[in-house]
Image (cartoon, rainbow, N blue to C red):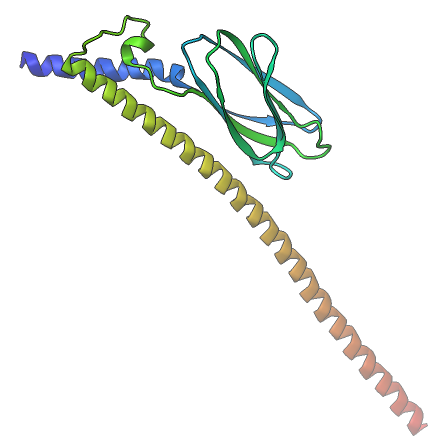
Length: 217
């Protein structure tokens, strides 16, 4: 009973700790960038972290955006123009990084952009808590670190799934709008054709009646 209770407490403590540290594993953002607009996000990292930065335009215009990454010393590490999606690996460096997006080349279309910033390698739970990583791990510590890696992989898969779901929903809504307007256009054509045919037939029969009356007179 004591062993079972301790096991339950350990598992519960792990999941609580994981939920608290999940925010530190990486960041996912989805935001709207207006036309002729530019915005930047900043994050502070240390020299022990290798960061992966990736982004994708979900909706708006030709699904393209200008992206730029600036190092803490002001150096431009990454710069691309009118890209739909891309990823970039940041070298370990201590300081504040800036991640900038620009839609200044567009004059009418807003963009909805998704981007994520996450570590390249998953730290152990001891490292994420700021504790000294033991040289020799116990069986429970090894199991916890393995579960942490698997849970991080699950979070990554969920992020990819949410991104694909958002893109698919946008495509479906866009297709539904096009089908609706095409149906309205076809309805107008059918109604106009039928109304025109009635007018033509009415005009023909009216002309025949007039010509028959004139011949009788």
